[in-house]
Length: 188
Image 1 (tube, rainbow, N blue to C red):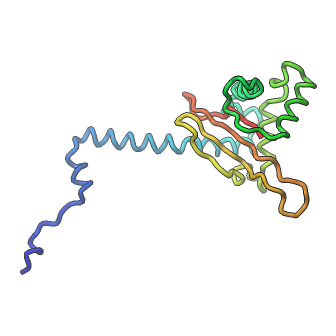
Image 2 (image 1 turned 30 degrees about the vertical axis):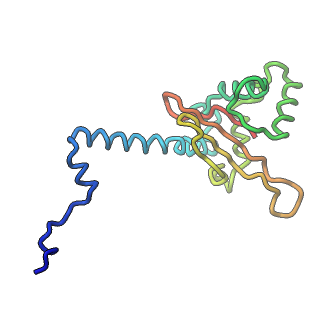
Image 3 (image 1 turned 135 degrees about the vertical axis):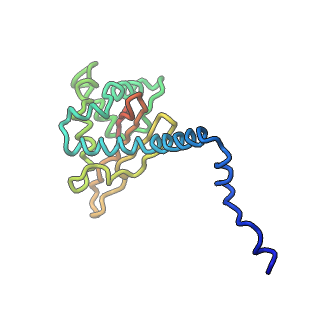
């Protein structure tokens, strides 16, 4: 008989360490792991809900996933240029649209033009075969533990070799609230 055949079979190192922990600590670690996984997945679930409501629900239902007052505030902050904003680089079309809205409506421009209906129409510009904007999402990732960035669509010329470009990419910023993730900024 060889000497190696009489050695006891060793347990995996990790399992041995976890078994040495008290039961309460193991349950706490498991709860922490599950909570972390749910937190990491939660903005993606909000995007799925936003897409579903945009396609199927009434426009008023968007208020459950969109903080329209925060969207107004972020656009005002971006227009101020002296204040920080969640809005990044905006397109010329967005600037032209805001300028035209200011000329038409004056000081109350954001409350009249930046509405849930406006956001719904903006998201539907990237509707793919009637299933919403979800297939057009190009990037979606955390920018901080409480902020999430989304880009819908690419900035490329249309494939049919005409000079008509595809819709401008839409950018969303989601912010964490006590009740979940909500859209706090939208621009293109």
